[in-house]
Length: 464
Image (cartoon, rainbow, N blue to C red; front, side):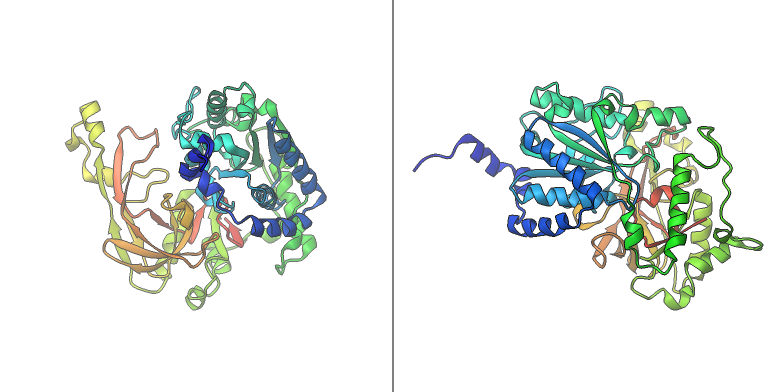
């Protein structure tokens, strides 16, 4: 019998490649036929241009620019089904775990490409040229990166340098076809304490890789006209256009850093002694009678720009929510490496000081919960099962060592999981010490910060 060649042997042993080739090609071919027939003229032009670049095997960098509802995710699904039905490899990544759940076979960009968490100007991805991941990238026909504007430009530059090194090519991203998606009206990279100029300088459009990007635009809001809500379509269109004008800077002045914007009268809570209570009654009507309904919390949420307002709304709703509350306290300490490297005396940091520290992405020292309360996950635990940072959950039971929750957002609605205590170390550079906190990675989310709402899958959002 003949021996298999070296490529066949290496492919069989490569688990990463096997996972990307394990799709049912016949099912995908049928799915592609259905999806392709629903493409708009704009989407079809973009689809054909990207497919042409893949077939030419000469590489290409594209940026699909479109605001929410223009069908970027639908386009990703169509392209993925088309290529995977032919046995080709498509890597779908997103800038956050919750956004990756919308993609077929999606992963976070940092996880897939081994991008460093703390990026600097000369960062590179931790990819060995002889590893399974390098071979997977070599066999990949198309790479998607959704919500790209959220990531610092050093992340894209690190991937560019790494792919050039792996494939020994000076073409952008090593000659691979890569498609970025998103819009710059939404959240840009976070620069702690950064000015407007520093934030703009950190974005993808300021990277040297941007000059290689061909921008493809989607302008038709499909979600607006496909919606079956009770709002008047003319009024909804007017509101959507108003939001776009704000995003474009057409209202309130240009590039001043500050603007005064007149909000429509019917969107305001006026002449109220307690506007927060009125907002709660509007967003969660008759909550004591409706909280047991299946989609009650899935369909609504309150958004606020500041964490103190979020905390006040959550505290009010938690106090009136029926049931016995359970209090969970964290265990805090200074990282042992910090004690050794800086010769810190642990007695200088009392428990009261450590317990009072609040940092981004870190659960509070005191966590008060009730059965049935909506909560948000603060840590990527199991991306394939939908347990990602910003996933919305509902508390099912409260144990001593674990909390049982049910997913109420995303593509895994109804799945139940157990959440243990996790030791978390914040990366906030404002902290002068390296703290480690053992706590359940959860936060009550009747209301949440605007920065947390991206891809949270709420059908009805009320802004405060």
